[in-house]
Length: 166
Image (cartoon, rainbow, N blue to C red):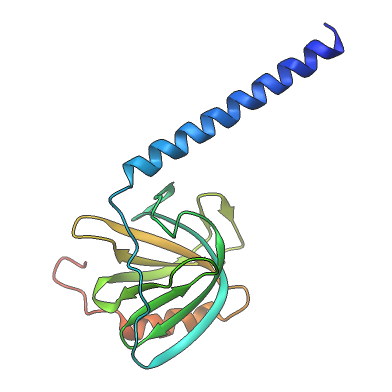
């Protein structure tokens, strides 16, 4: 095999991989087209403000199944502000995502999610209702802030669980 043929095969395989990735993302985006993060900043008294990275939003308790929710589809820097009315996610270049306290389901620690593995309990997640039928988990890496303080602040605004636990 000549060097030129080897280069052509390598480029061809690379192009096929890129086409497959684009096709997969397009299908996922179409699947999740009806899901939209609540845009608009929530008011209320500020309980705490925390900075770090927004990692991903996945289906509830399925950390390897990413949701292509508008404004939450890609990793970004984030400032997560907990107020008496809920949680604001402020990311550069996107509108503020305001998750009302009534839509918050739970929170916790994680070690991994889609495309990110960190030290034990290095991620925090927030479970929330996107709509009546869909619950999502959004993962944050708060390396610039205290994750334990974030969880404590969020626990203050979580609604009381119902008999079903959700």
